[in-house]
Length: 267
Image (tube, rainbow, N blue to C red; front, side):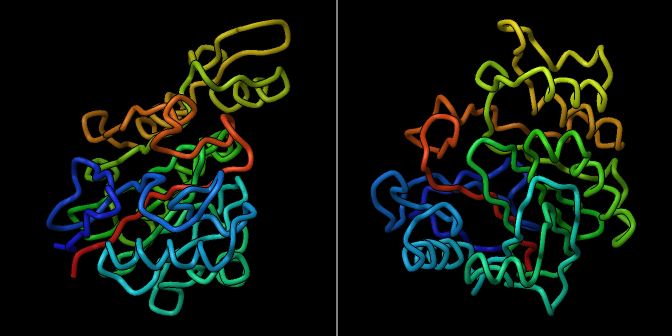
């Protein structure tokens, strides 16, 4: 079992335990100041680079690892498998992420001790754990990635790389913007309808030309279609836009920091 330092007030998923550590950071416990206070883990949002590196060092130490593995997220659907050569890449900042994981929005591994991470501040971060095969995946699921099916493709990648059976997977959905807080326009809504169909129940009209979107609801649909059991999906059910005392929210305040989900397989 990976020993987690609780000084950062990390929030574990229910399946975090002997086989895997799967947690969400809050905005507390770091050294960043101002609108980034204090555990900002994003190096691309205007915060002091050295402060971000110190914050990442603290998270890595809390997880009992030397470095975090951090992709260059671009709201796409590309998945990267992380072996020994890529483990810990991206930890040193934007340039490191771009060099190792250009335009990657999901990571998978079966390598113990490798900390996979996803950064968010309203998008839904998702962790997948296969206790049968000893494998994990993480995915960045904003509106764009959800429409493109990045979470489904992460499940498929774990099946192809590790032999994971979707019915064995445990899924954790971290804090994300809630359906009542996320208003989009007609063009974006059309993309959602094209991806999920007109009867998915993800869109609620608000005013002319606008509606709200239930991103997490879309992810549940995709997980079910991929073969993940409903009972194996654990949603933290926290709206980031209304929880800014604990989590960063780009829709609530700009500029702002980023929090992370992190998953590490036990040795």
